[in-house]
Length: 354
Image 1 (cartoon, one colour):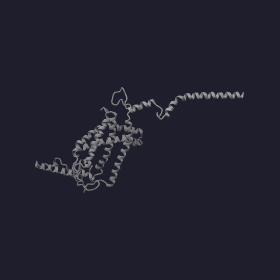
Image 2 (spheres, rainbow, N blue to C red):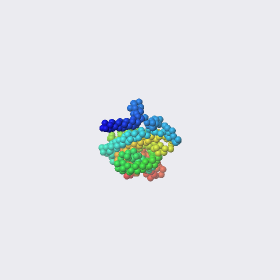
Image 3 (cartoon, rainbow, N blue to C red):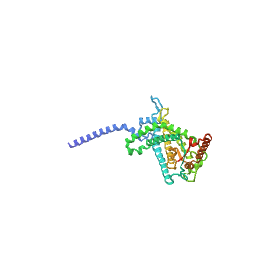
Image 4 (tube, rainbow, N blue to C red):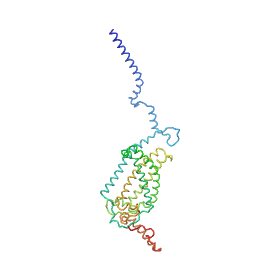
């Protein structure tokens, strides 16, 4: 009896294991071809029809669609990913290092050198440097430039600086407002740049003495007086960087702002790259212009606030221009005296007492 029970139990185990083996083979047999394909070096993995399809689409960069328009047949655009990598890995860190280094050098220079003083001190007599229209043009351009610069920098660096302060929701609202302001006021910057060009270009052409001014560093590092006209070589370089950079920013910004010119995604991507690079370059160079126009050179800020500078300042930094203004004033006074006693001071006088 006991032997019969053992035989029955053994048969039961054989039947169970046979059924389990059959089920296992049923499940595993269909997977064997995939396993063979996975280990086969010629295939390199399990074939995925969907992945192969989109891989082919990506490589061809074209497709078909019933929607008509620019680039509507491009189903996958790989350049967008390349632009994202460039923006995150090159543009943002290099731009931050560039701006930070220039700001650090300016602060260090001010601490070591201090402001450039007027030789012999102020004279107390003023001479007109900029007209009302020239100052309006300048401040109109400056206001737009810094509005666009600050909103653009927030869009570029805000996630690193503002999210820890405002939180994701606060930064999202701030970034949205900056984007709208940037897009709204951006087209006006082209008008400002053209106004700047027309107003100041005549005095920003290369003239004698400009190369010498550059070689001597404008006297900022010592070496005595350096002769200059109405604008020195450094100011001329800044003018052309601002104008040409502003035109690049305006043209690329219009391409990005208004997708109605028939531009494809390739043009939009190039415009985005140019816009970012030009913005960082112009902003960085502007730091030097702002420093020299305010704390860096004594008596300069008044030229763009009330339009006048001290005569001693003019002699120190723009002696040739000062001589031209005095000569023109002398001729006006002489002509006024001959014509009936009117003098330059009673008509339009570029010189006044402090």
